[in-house]
Image 1 (cartoon, one colour):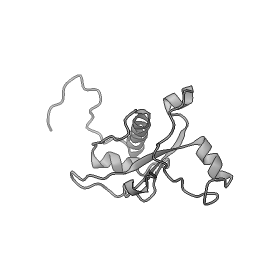
Image 2 (cartoon, helix red, strand yellow):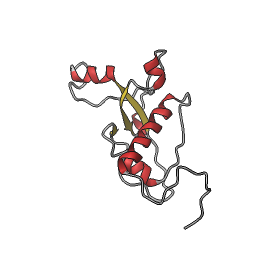
Image 3 (cartoon, one colour):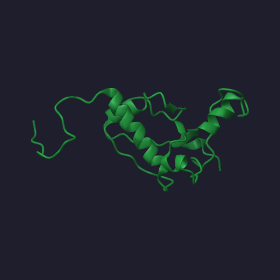
Length: 137
């Protein structure tokens, strides 16, 4: 096997647990959500994508991100942070389409609030991905 630097604490000969990979992917989604950019290219190993999109807090709403990525494959999608407010709206049927209806992206991923919860991304209860053509004007 190739040599690794002696001070690289992240490298191991053992394969990382799937749940750990998914948790790292979810943390990355939170970080991406808090970025000010409106379009971001993300490059990762296909295994990271595969485990991240299996996480129960990540929903693929027609974006086609769940199937395993091929070598050098590019996919595009819109990420929407489902907040506690969104979840309460859906649970009470006030979302268009009634209770349990998927949220439609509005072009704004989620307002960047001033509260500590919003600043940390803690208000996101799930991340939902839509095809690009579903962005409203």
